Image (cartoon, rainbow, N blue to C red; front, side):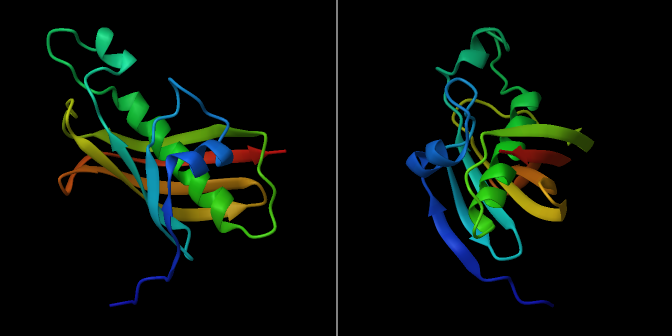
Length: 153
């Protein structure tokens, strides 16, 4: 068994996320990021509420949080981890999605759920990052994917 990597940032709150990412309502899909570790892993948190715009059409009779929004939230969590973790880098002007691989949706997410996006780095090349993410509700995996993104100046 290997020891966990040390925590570099215990909490990145919504105000720090707004200073880190260019995303804004309604496309900012994480509320905070916790336990960003030196090995470029961390956990994004999303509190799903019924009054979110996606539920107006997905689906009015049985609201289900859209899977594509969970994948975007994984990328946003990875972006916060990458930007906050690398010392000496300036805030990028944009974060662009590069890849989505091995994506699976396992269980619906409903209003009232809290999603934890458990992200860990798979690799990095210059300004490009790749992460594996497990979205969990109450400890159970509801979605997973490998995502890649590019940070730009």
